[in-house]
Length: 348
Image 1: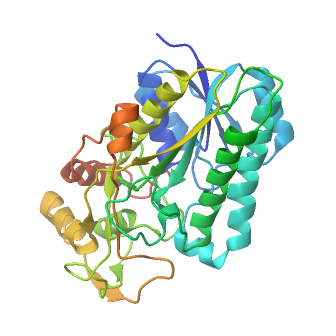
Image 2: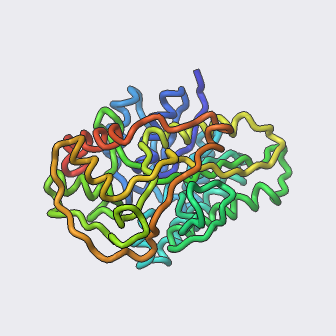
Image 3: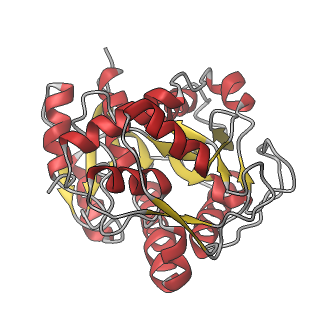
């Protein structure tokens, strides 16, 4: 039974909360820092019901280095999982300054405090957005990184900062930086209990939560942004992955980090995806098939920053992390719908 404490920034958010389930199932003790701007403290109460034990958390912005230092002084963390940050592509185009300040600034503060406390083990939630409009699919980790929106640029800057730390940071300690950058694709679904799931603030920016909001009656119709892409049905194609598969990928990356030699600097990127792509209309039709609920939709103009197709080559994660996605599109849809039906207004 593991007893290590793991700091989880943004642990009340969609992906972070599911990662906490995976951590607890593996015997780790997560400690959460979250400002609840994009999340709800009620998620932590639900988490306690799932994992059967209290979840300790601190409410503040990760950019607050004084409070972050205090938390590090109170605990003996073995590693950090860093999820906190703003995450909407279209919003980042409208509010780039806020995204750079929050995502890059928050990570910079976290890394400084980690370095001060001699803790240099990090799992960072990056994104497939760093690949931009890929030259070829499936995408491998060595593919050219070319971002098309400010959100993606914040992830790329953070990745480069982590690569520079692992390549160049000189430390008086024997502990070197060991970092896993997880480029995840499109997480959907929810925990099978229906206790936790994705709860976007306001009108959703991502496809699946939008479908769910229409299906539950909160929104009148789905907007399909662009039907003139170079794909089979003209709509964009993405690699959808069950959020619990993604959570287990973060756990696998953590275990990979713990196997590294303390004296070795290492920073490596891994794709977390299924290796399959599904179009907007295919996902919509599959939702109707598996739930029996019809979803009204109309076609709108393309959104700025969107691309035609993006899906992973997940073989490096399979070979190095001993991880691969297990859950089907049917499970993703059914688990997501179970969450939405049980929580029509999310955590509110």
